Length: 115
Length: 232
Ligand SMILES: Nc1nc2c(ncn2[C@@H]2O[C@H](COP(=O)(O)OP(=O)(O)OP(=O)(O)O)[C@@H](O)[C@H]2O)c(=O)[nH]1
Ligand SMILES: [Mg+2]
Ligand SMILES: [Zn+2]
Image (cartoon, rainbow over all chains, first blue to last red):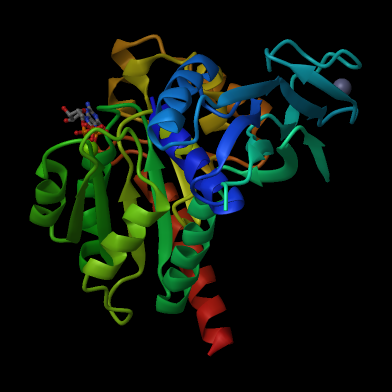
């Protein structure tokens, strides 16, 4: 359960990018299935924290991505949630994980603080 | 990229949430390399035998091993390692389920590390198979410990961890005769998602399998030392 620290990191990064005091409408987050982060609890932590930090009612828009792997036997690329299921091309279960660990801030929608 | 809607604007940032952590981790790694130390991050579920392994390793490495202990609460593990003869620093995370690079950086700053004496900096992470795997601490080697009492099916339940370790240690092997733990299965599942993992089956209690693991660590130390000497 480290969603609270992830939410804190996201808010700090958003403040560094758009400046503290900006009203932030939404933050887009890319979240891989191997990120170790639970989307629901992250959303809960984030929404609470954003409001208490004065960003407003900020929506966290999560783009959930499955793991992408490359078969080490035949080289074909596929998405999977079951690493032992075997490659759709050759049936062998031996992969290199290409993506799925990501937890990246993708977009920030905000209003500049009033001068 | 920028688009406006009313007074609001959307900017594309594409920045990893861990960017700051990773930056500090890179500094930790560089610092260890300047000192000629190999950083090792040991991760496992609670009670898999991390501290017992360190106590056993202390008999081989003695004062050349420095240890950072991460626990949610208490300094018991640091005391155990200190009694075994090593420099040990306890981080109490006070609720946090993992260590991060900043905590390790602060610990390193507080530890009297002596490049003439120390060869290994071992970090015992908080017992947890999920959260620690997302945080680079600045280690050179990531070790995942899986004790035979946990069951041979655990690797694929925690792929984020086991796909990114350098070394799999199957621990408490002295208990194998009493259990149905298929070491080949655990190793095979780990290799299925991690092409380069090195695996060892060992017991801190009996010392079985420890020598092969020591050879591996010695080679890692020699490599970092050679890198430092070449840079000087
Ligand atoms: N039989 C046997 N028992 C072991 C071995 N290694 C550890 N144990 C036992 O396992 C229990 C937990 O060991 P620890 O070394 O404290 O485990 P840990 O991973 O450091 O635990 P946390 O720091 O709390 O996560 C203790 O009772 C140890 O005596 C081993 O090789 N064989
Ligand atoms: Mg311990
Ligand atoms: Zn294939």
